[in-house]
Length: 435
Image 1 (cartoon, helix red, strand yellow):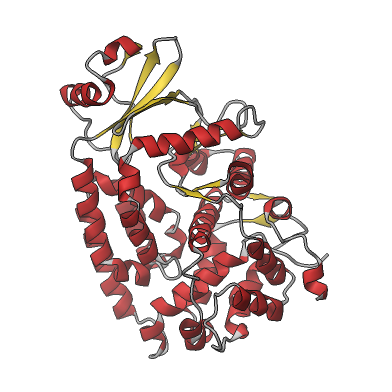
Image 2 (cartoon, helix red, strand yellow):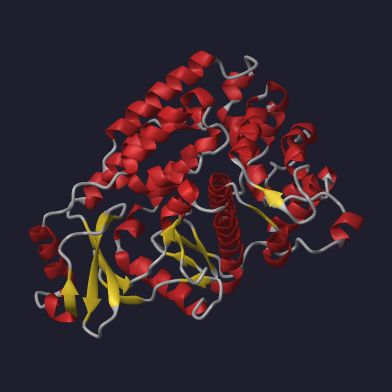
């Protein structure tokens, strides 16, 4: 059977561009030097040590890039992110009540049978309380911190100033783009009504689904959101101590959720990290936190499947053709296929029929190939780009990169290619290989 892989080719193309640009100055000297890495690491850890709770969400996003960190910095990086994601001291009950007064009205207590003043968890810009709605339903109440906006903006501005250091330490992950995207989405993140609208769309589209569960929204205001309660085991716990069966099931469900949502919902959940997903007792994947979503009314672009099929069939001239057609290559610019093939072929070779095994070692080997001077093409760095008029490609690359990172943390193995063949438009067009 022809060798194929399960990572969409747009992710590969973006990582080639990101790595090439990020390493351009180093490549001209042959490689990134230890001195450059040490300096970048010092800056990254200094910045992470200064961030407040407002940047928890970014810390969660960066956590899936753990495998991209050079081994000698991995423990320090992991410890820094753990501290960043630790729950902040709870907001005093009086402050919580004042926020509820402003958002739900001074008679808000009448809307609940019970309300626990002690939060059960911290969200990125708020905290979550367990309560019982007036009709008897158990609910989660997310209440935003009073100074969340100021804290979040200050943190993201600091991160933007040092984004170059993050790009150097996390080679190939395009951390700079991730930080800029968080800045652009600040307003959306701060208005829970927008999050509620997306969650309602997902809950409606996936109602009664045998594989996925999205809690319904009960009430929403700009700084407070009430949703149905959901019981489950967070993927962070599955990663830490889950059984082999749970790890594999979680990875497959996570991949299917990301691949299928644009077609089923017309939308992409754009915040992939373990804290937003749970394995429920009924074996469904529970999904929360819809503060970062991207509209995709036409689903995943067909060209993604065409590029994936070319890479997975090891037809690199066909890949170049599609990349040029989709604007990933500047008009008339030359590109070198050899460095791309050397990056991707070892991943393709890991396929066993339709099965693929995600692991930290796999990602670490990919990062090592990215840093290998033989695979750093100045021609590609100068000639390739992410299409400016197709922002969905950038988002797809980031989301699928995050899914790959979580699957690697899960050490998940299974028939991932079957999901790609089912949900990736254009992938099943076998005429691509014959054309």
